[in-house]
Length: 316
Image (cartoon, rainbow, N blue to C red; front, top):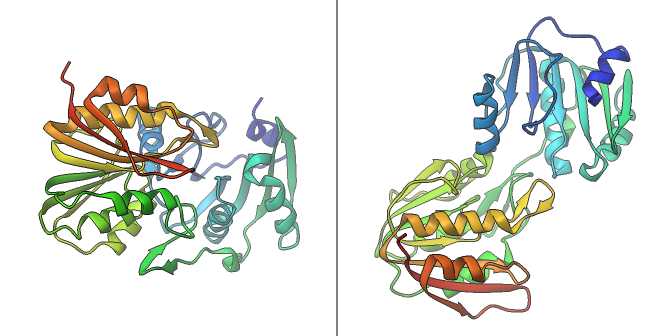
């Protein structure tokens, strides 16, 4: 039985009105809940919940709920922000998560701020609940550096990613035409791409709706087009693609995600198209690059990162 199921058995009141679940993965147990709204800014998960028949939003709408369930994310500051939002709008707040996602830290800190009304532990995780309280001091605030603005929970929220900096410095002088940034995040690489006046258009494809909203704040250029979508399934036609692909699914490192990016980039590039990408040194992308492109070369790089220029995608 799931932790939420055990919680209902342990005395968590079952809601009769609207319930909101914030940032659940696609396997979260909602069987004991009715009238459920899912808040999930990650595009593939949002679509998966919609395909299950649930109403979905990318952020918490400003309206009251009887019960709010906050699922811990990889970012403790982001989770604290979600808890504060939930507490402002719901009568009862549930927080659920694994130890690796910082649930114990949230439990200890919230015990000092609210009365914990119940909790259950199972499977290296914990779930606890409390009644609505003013937790506005836990809200995350946007942060700025190097003329960029970000927020907790997005990739590289506190500084420019070193791999992306390396790739930006290695972009060719003749970058031009229709370009895409696959996995654009909050827009650092895209901002550098748009320094090239010969770039006609730039598509930013990003699965995290929150990161994409900050990309819109960071980039004010009419050539930029913003797409909340899955880069591994995106359809487009480009002269060049620039990317620093993610390689985590949740907390698990998975080169398969980067491989899926590369495979789809090859499909989206025009006959003489180019891919410029950066990857962590340990990630084994060489094989898939050679499967997908006629020409593959490693350029520059350092002990942490490797840069690739691949051209002429193979047509199967």
